[in-house]
Image (cartoon, rainbow, N blue to C red; front, side, top):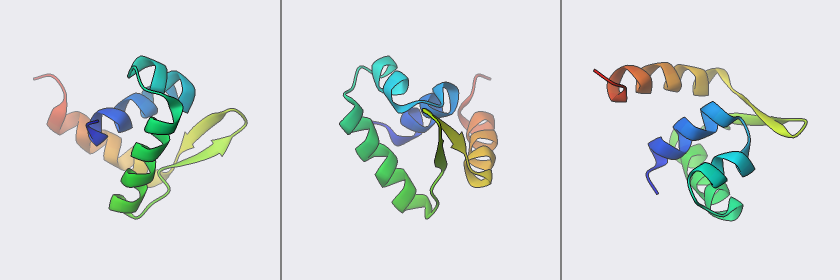
Length: 73
């Protein structure tokens, strides 16, 4: 699984179950990818809020940078 793709879908969905469904993965697989991202970037990236995820400031910054470098254009 491409970790940037996983991050992008998590940012869009803000929910691990829905993001995993979109990526055609099981929730444990996406949770493992999120764990690798957290270790790689040394940041939690998302915190649980109710049943969803709230991105950390670092996640919001990464999303802006990734969108510029990997988005359409």
